[in-house]
Length: 595
Image 1: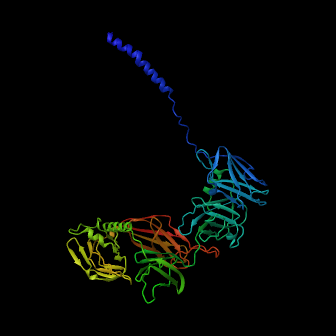
Image 2 (image 1 turned 45 degrees about the vertical axis):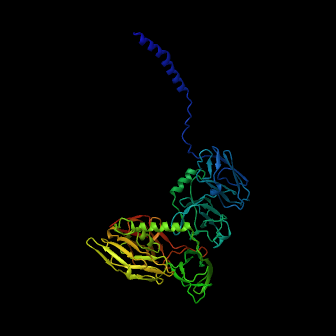
Image 3 (image 1 turned 90 degrees about the vertical axis):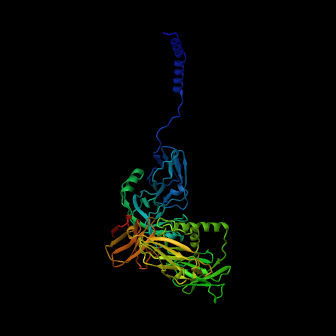
């Protein structure tokens, strides 16, 4: 072997190999943080109690319930229910593995008590809850063993109501929920379901309540209430109530026996909800119910002078009034059928700041470009977009993003009533595939105070239109004049709509049915009345998802009416179709609804 190679080999043996062994030893000695085991997802398990669950002849003052691990109580005030309710609430605490209940109230003789803690008991490490925890005992020789299930829904929306109290009474006096706490009480789940265990046999009155002041009684006008028209009867459920899995399984298989609809009781007194200065020179008054024969009088304006031009909305529950003789503060007397309802005082001075003016200017300019700069609008040479922006400060149109709905009128709505105008100055430029024609369209005001103007023309979906309003064409009652404006638009073709119709088949003839078309948020877009006919055609609809609601209009007044508890009047029945309907372009959808 060459001397040079021998030298290199000796160095390798003396230096590299020992260094490698040291590094290996260090790596083997490195301490790594333990990863632990799988996450604990097991809830605490009840090991026993003193007295035992479902005990009889109990006359003590303390209950100790033991679990297999450390526990805490999580929001017990949210879950805790005691049936029958106690006048003095017990003290409930946790010590280590145990829940300790100290009873302060005097227990009734021969009565089964049920402590429902829901999901308040959780383990200390991962907050895994004990599901639907119940503990029951009897002060007599027998323990009640019957059950009752059901659900609670909102009477109008038909959505499940969570956290509602459901109360059972053996007293059928009409006003008992207003005067006495119930015999038994339960609370609905997130899905609106409720369940009673350990009930005594017999018949009960079932009442559901949103208990605003947590006193187990119906005593606030804002509390929603519901009741079962017939008495309810508990059933026998052969399960071990100490086995929470068995209770959960039974709840998932048994059919709900009691259905209760929650409703707000009507406030029959007409009220003014709000009265404000909603814009410069304009006041708005909002009423709780539609007005039938309203009367308004400005107390601090001479009767010989007109004080405002008035406009009511279609449902007659909102008034907009443009002031023509304006004091600094308006004292307005409001009457219904000659009977004075109220007197309101409204300040007529609106403070306008620089920030407000800037915000209004930005909003106005944005509105113009939203209207003008759309795919439907061609570029028109020589036109000033800045000048167009000024026009929308005075009025708006019924267009949507540069489109006029098929078979819809073109309406110009002014911010203030118009005093004088030159309708012949309005020009409509019609651009067809072959030619461009300028005409003077017909136009007419649709209301007595001249705030809504309809432009009349036989619209064609293949043409492009430019509505031109010269400067000074309109002057409002305050002397303000309109600026010039060009509004370019097209009419949506029929092919971009769909049709939706529903045939109503009901088993028995009865009251009129109000059939409503709903949007995806559940808001009514259209309502049609079904009396003798069966088919409801909602006509042309933009492509979207829709729902259906049916209201049994028992009194034929064209709207849904709520219930009255003391008169035992249930709210009018509302049905929601279980399906959502997709309306597509150039497509006709037919549905049959049986009930």
